[in-house]
Image (cartoon, rainbow, N blue to C red; front, side, top):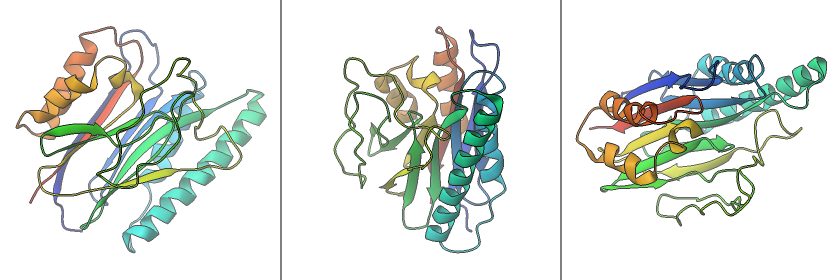
Length: 241
């Protein structure tokens, strides 16, 4: 695959949590980027997010993009089943994780997600969230193309996840298609990022003409300069000629 992108990723425990239950994956060799945010407490949450990243990290990409997407979905479904089995053996209600991932294709970008880890797209000087948080109070409706409606704002009572890997017997992954023009930039993040800063602040970081690593550094400087109550993780992908 000819590389038409630059990317960078980082994860941090934050200022309050003792353990990091987030995990990230940057695979420029196959055009795959992942952020996973584990649930269920230490040893459970990091096990879940780590398993997702480990399995996706070993996937080959030999066929077309749709075969690759199918193998990603099959892998996530297998992880979903395994996490449910582990939870049963340990006698706990849930061992799970949210996930957001980005896949490159020469003709478009594909973003998939489960839960409230987010993907933002910065294009034509504007930032927009292209995922919809799977939480109570936010309508579960997938934006099917880059020009779709803006994601709904969380309603009162929002915050309870309605979807996570490991939560239900059957796993549903939502997908959205985005453009891949040169200069387009994507930010994948756990909620440790968007809890600490507004979309306008993320927009301001992406608007600066800088490399993905510099955008990432700016995001973490903001998050770590505040409460950083949760684990903080992000991956930045910039498309180029």
